[in-house]
Picture 1 (tube, rainbow, N blue to C red):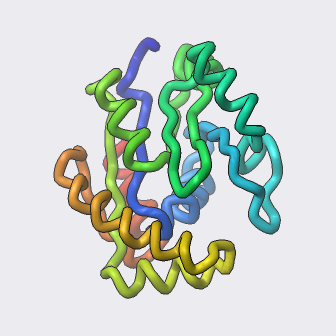
Picture 2: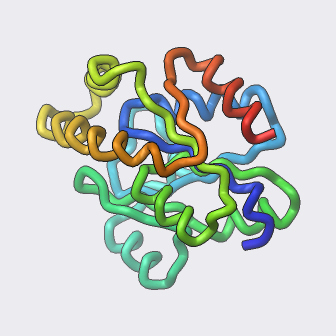
Amino acid sequence: MKNPKKLIIITGPSGVGKGTVVKAILKKDINIWLSISATTRKPRKGEEDGKDYYFLTTKKFKEMINNEMFLEWAEFAGNYYGTPINKINEKIKYGSKVILEIEVEGACQVREKFPETIAIFLLPPNKQELEKRIRNRGTDNEESILQRLERADFEMSSSKDFDYVLKNYEIDKTADEILEIIT
C-alpha cells in the first residue's frame, strides 16, 4: 500500500459513536472515502449490504481470510469483522484519504503493518453514557451488552497506544476535531 498517511483509523469501544462521527465527517469533507467493512453479523434495521457493510456468511469470510483479502480482521461478540483491502489500495493510489472505522483489535493490526497511519481513539464521556448508548441501540441481548461493556474496559485501556484520543461528547465537535487532525 502506498502513501499510508492517507489512511486514517477511527476506533474505540462498541457504542462510542464511531459510525455517527464518521457520517458527520463525510458530510463535511467529500474528499474522504470510508472503507466499507465486511461482517458475519446480521444487518441492523436500515443497514444495506454494500453500503453499511458487506454482510457475508462465515464460510465466505473465512475464504477471504485464507486468500489474504483483508487488511485486518477480528472476531468480536461471536461475529467476524474485517476490512477488504482491494478498494483501499485503489482509493489511496488515486489520492483519496481513506477512513477505517474499525474495532480496536483491527486497528492494532493495521498499525503494526502501517505505523505511519493516523490512529484516532474515541472515548465515551463516561462508562454510564457508553452503556446507555449500547442499550438504546436495541440490537443486542443482555449477554451481548454485558460482553461489549466488559470488552470496552480492555479497549479503553489501550487508548494510550493511539496517536490521538478524543472524548466523544458531541458529534459535530468531535467530527471537526478529527478533520483538523487529518487535514
